[in-house]
Amino acid sequence: MTGSGRKLEYGFVLAVMALALSLSATGQTVVAPPAAPATRSIAKAEIPPVPSMFGESTERSIKVDPSINLSLCVSEGTLKVNGWTRNELRVFVQDGSNFEFKTQQTSPKTGDPVWVMVTAVSDRNKVVPRSECIRGGDIEIDIPVNAAVNVKGQDVTSTIDGVRKASVKIIGGNTFIRNVTDGVTVSGGQGGIAVESSSGAMSLDSTTGNIVVFEAGPSDIGDIFRAKTNGGAISLEKITHRQIEVNSISGSVSYSGSLLNGGSYSFGTSNGSIRLTLPTDTSSTVSASYGFGAFRSEIPITTITENISEGPVKSTVGRIGGGDSTLRLTTNNGSISIRKP
Amino acid sequence: MKQDCLDIGIIQAFLDGELAHTESARVSGHVATCDACALMLADAEDESALVFPALEREFASLVPTQRLWSKINASIETEKQSAPFWQRAWAFITLNLTTPSFVAAAGMIVVFGIAALLIIDRGYKSPQVAGVRPVQVSAPQPAAPPVASASSPDTVVSNIPETRPIMAEQISLRSAVRRPRTTTVTGTPAFASPDVSNGYFPGEESYVKTIASLSRSVESAKDAVMRPGERVAYERDMAVVDDAIAKMRTEVKRNPRNESAKQVLYSSYQNKIDLLNSVSQKEELVASLK
Image (cartoon, rainbow over all chains, first blue to last red; front, side, top):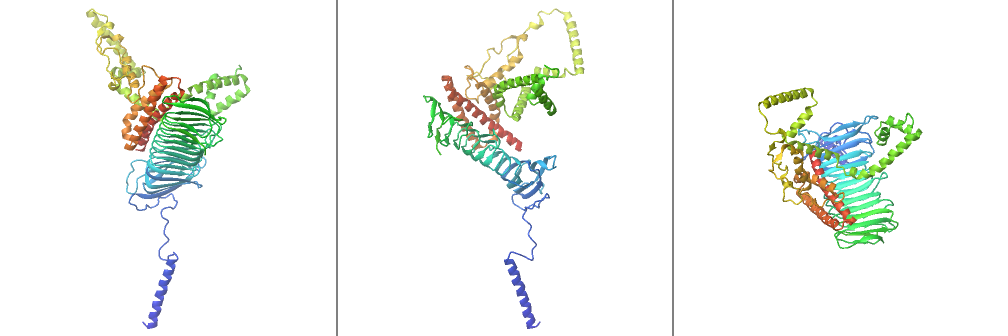
């Protein structure tokens, strides 16, 4: 080979290398085929599992009725349910059990599923699940905004956001509910419960966890708000239900918001204090029973009857403003205070 | 009243929402044109309005259906196991009385039995009337010894000596079997000192009975379903509630007109029921997850 020929060859090789370098710098490649999206493509067919040391990852989706009712049982893991505007249910389980959709009922009009259960099935290693409950490091569910979600489980940290109705029944783990429009029922076991910007009838129940609610109201006239915990504290702010029943056994109760005319409000605890922050224009008839504590109010109360003699229980009945709502406060061993905002 | 006026039963069914849609439409159409039926409907509505608020407390205090059924089934099972032989035999006989072949066979046995008795009896004269022959019968031992113990001040103890001779016809076995069951309810150790001798305060008894019933099931289950931390919290809360019940009960006894103490007493009872319910609900949930 001649010297000019060698030069040409080197030049060609250098040019190819320079071209490859420049292309890789711009994020493209001409050699490798386009990378498949991780495991998130929406398809009814099962996505090949992603190898993991904890379990496999699976994603499935199905076309559903907008008013779908979803039921699932989660033995452990983190569950996130998110409402979206598509008539499609998508479930993604990362590092967890394989699962399937069981259509329990279809819509007579559209034929789309209106009641679907998500249940665990054997994985590729033919490991038969111990129950129908799925488990996973992360379980993500996208579901129509008009859906009702029913979750039961063991140790689950669940977040439900932007659906019509939510019902959670778990043994342990915290529950966060947000933007639910037509009712929330949570039996939280040992876990705490937090509800935010939601409406409808509410029933929140925990054994040792705290209950925190911020901005909740009725979706229909007569919707009741109930919160009960045995050993935790209850904190409520900006609740617009006209009937509120709150009870704790050995925790404190705090409420900040208005008392609506004609409303009925009951706050009780056996061993804790009750703190209310009410606007100065509140109109309510107050009935307070308390034991080894004191009853104080920054808002003027016109006393109707009072029994503060020696004994395990004292009582005061009085009126704030016109007395248009009913406020019942009960504590055996704690103080009651009403403050201005 | 016209010939085609509605029956009061149909009106009541209409009020209760038990009629089919078409029937319901027919009734409402008829009532719109018939004064007599409209009057009857108004009367029935008034009666319902009077009765339902009175029963509202009873309706509201119902236990959730699933748990109720499980308790009923458990009680039936327990009763079946604890029933004496003669009771089971009687139940078997009454159940099979509807079967013609069984009745025929039983009839034949009775006829043969009477004939045999007559033949035997012809041989000698009985010294006594069979029906009043003294029989030595021991009063049945209490089915639940721990609660029937005389050491418990709350226990109702039978006055009948255990070995007293009793005429066979004078014994009501049914009542003898029932006796310890009464003590089981009133003497449940889990409940904070119900004072049977002084009676209950108005409305208190239903709470006490519900608590006693729940306590029995929860006591055996709580170790299995609760984790140690939760168990500690449960015992603490139970102590708080029991303390409140005891204090308020003393106060109400001292001053029966203290409405606040009564209110706290009943809410404490309700707290105790809720606390016990939380354990049984958890038991149900754990079972459903398996």
